[in-house]
Image (cartoon, rainbow, N blue to C red; front, top):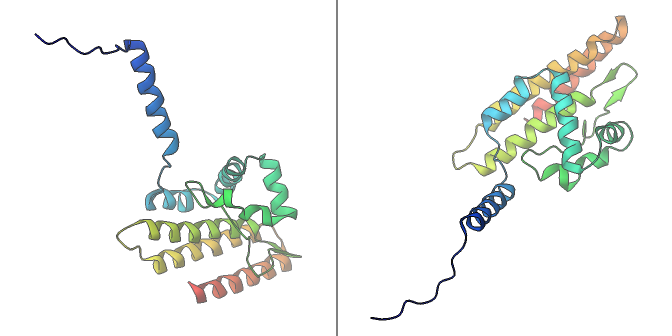
Length: 182
């Protein structure tokens, strides 16, 4: 009879602990993949205020800063909103606000609308690149741009008289300009 080779026994507690560490490590290293339905919910299933609140907190978490810092960036230093950390999470949270058009003016403030619009377009692009089945991004970009107009109109609703009319005129111009590239 051959002697059995020596095997070190791992205690059940140590084995369970090792399994838990490996499992936790794989969970931490996995990034949840965004879906079209989750994107649609974030865009169309939330009010402009609810979306903005979520986005501010998600941006703060992604960049390891406070929500107050993100508010400051929106107001005074928007370049902070486009850092790599804002682009590298589950969602692309980056924004350049209203790109080349003014974000604010005497009769309007479209920063919130521009943030949600950037979120929509950037994440549609990301989802399209991740899927084997192509997304009809043109139709979805047009829909997101119509939401952009609705969000800008909400921003205009806080104005009165001529300022509201001017704000809505600017909103319509922005909407038409963006539709040209959708």
